[in-house]
Length: 314
Image (tube, rainbow, N blue to C red; front, side):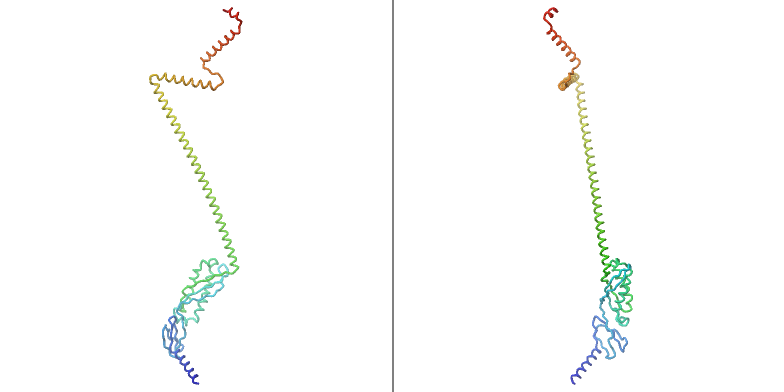
């Protein structure tokens, strides 16, 4: 019996103590009600309550909270179903509004995030859902924050985690990407072949230009060489003629020229006789040759006649 009374007293003392004193931690705030009405907001620290009159009705977490938004099916602008999930980051700014403005602000934030996300996904195509993710996050945060203001909730940011199309769409996208890769490969190959042909033709053109320039320069050099040769020969000939003329003007020059011409005549005439099978003689020499041939024939005729005939002739 003693122990039963002691236990009852202990329980009563514990209930009175817990209702009489309240310790609020630094990370939270509590709402104090007196006789069912809002009394005040209890800040972190030690607080005294009147038992059976005051009570701590609500305790609100004041730190930033991360809430997982479950995956849901959304339809894009081009009528493709995708499963989308995300994370919403929020913080209680007013514990009074969070306690009396809505029964469960976490469930309200999740439902609002899902509704806004379906609306945003429906505005864009499947291809844009990957590139416009940042813009969608900003739009969802703005819409949720506007609706959650009466709840005393501040939505800090929203992050879309996964956008998963159906398996059929994934297969179609993979085939499309493969075809796109093959197309790009073909384009790259054709561009490379085209560039190679261009480089080859440009190289051939430059080679032909270089060859033609080399031939042109060679012809110019040859023409310059021939011109210089003709000029040198003409200069030497002019100098020779000038010197001959100067020599002729000197005493005995005329005789020397004639002697030189006779010498050259004899030399050239000898060369002609050595190289030809036809007898070529000057007029005077031909007359002498005829005379000697006639004398030879008379001599041969005399040798063949009888001796008495010769004597009679004498």
